[in-house]
Image (cartoon, rainbow, N blue to C red; front, top):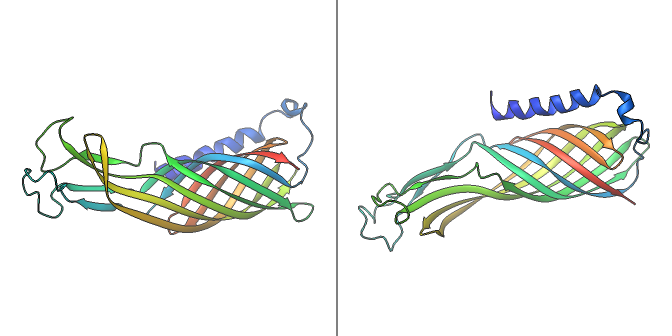
Length: 229
């Protein structure tokens, strides 16, 4: 089963069990979440599919001119990132009611990987062993996002759609004696959009799942902690 299917399955289970929790479990909560202007903190998990591997060919570091074929382009080997990337993200959100049931929402923040997006190995032409060998790596460990959308609110549930703009930084570098020497940075930009579904667990806490389609599709699981005006 692919990572995308797993993410969607988790979102499905999350909302399935929320619907089937006995109503008495919510007896101490307000009957519904009021539609008010609010600011909040957002955090969650995102998977991004690049549709391909981003491959980079590394040259040998100039100071390692004693290594075989040090002056041959690509002699240190190749590394790749993708096609599936995973990020945790954190940021800030805002929403504002447009009518009795419709909310306008917006958010922005940063993305950080779990350490699963890195491809690292010893130089192909370096016979030395750790800690004396030189390593090459590619990594997509950071990024940013901004989003805007509409939500239709129905008591504790809401559905809607979002448009999101993502920026992902991919670094190709050398690691010599625990010091990084960047060879190239690739910046991937993506606009995506798609449906979402959410549920207010408490009046100021909601959980949301979305599937955003674009050049680099993403699947998001988001927690919103709201502070109402």
